[in-house]
Length: 300
Ligand code: FAD
Image (cartoon, rainbow, N blue to C red; front, side, top):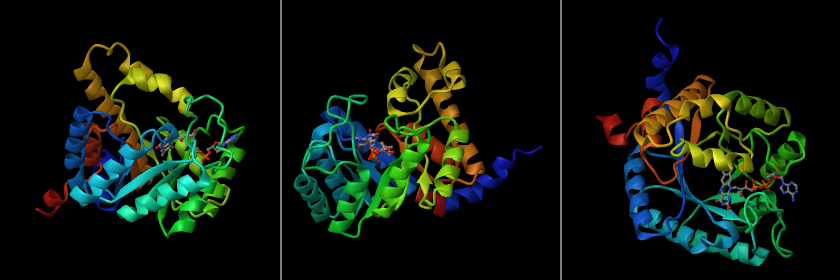
């Protein structure tokens, strides 16, 4: 019998939206790789591309530089990530205004993690915004911007329970968030259950799955737990023994991510956010599979 997913794929692409996340490069070599990635992904016509913001504002300048270059040299709409970490309200407001002056109209508003690292106790700046909801409200006070926020299908590690966690999401929506992007996850049932919970709580903004293609399994397994995401045993099993076999690792990563995304399409998901890790290959291949193709090729 024909795979029903195949029959849905060609027209699926026309209604699927994607966005890509990058981090600001630290070295000239990383900068070069990022721009190769941006150039390769640009023709796919993402809704926006986002640029992350480091702990304690450590990459504030790099984030601004990367966002500025995207604005100047591409046709892409950049979204600037922003956190509350170690900033007074006035400082955060100034950063928002600076981005707006550059021409930025999209933000990803986050509380952020302590400068000491994920897992350390979070202490808001005494004069700062304390969470994603307060930062979202600040951004919306300054202008009519598009604001994305975070969502946690497995709940944020600091949240006592799902109700508390979803209550924060609700506060962010009330403050003006337009969409939520999830923490990465590998078990689509968890995502679906989470979306059901969110809808039952009266939250109706898009909950866009954040997809992390596994470029390095050992690294992902190392930080997943601290981020509030778990790696199912079946995913670990697929990468077992591939530590020194990069080529097979890459093929398996493509298969795992493709399987996850195609299953989400089957479940009716129409928007995806890719954590690219500044690499184009897997994100590009997965987009191809779901019918998101370079605009020129589509027109031809
Ligand atoms: P919030 O939305 O404010 O809160 C998240 C949850 O934590 C809430 O559900 C709430 O219940 C709980 N919580 C918050 N504060 C407390 C508290 N004081 N006590 C108990 N529970 C609390 N980090 C970066 O540094 N830079 C980035 O660019 C960045 N981009 C991200 C993009 C996405 C899509 C996602 C999902 C995460 C990103 N992060 C980034 C990571 C994020 O900063 C961390 O997950 C951080 O721990 C929480 O930030 P938040 O905005 O999700 O917090």
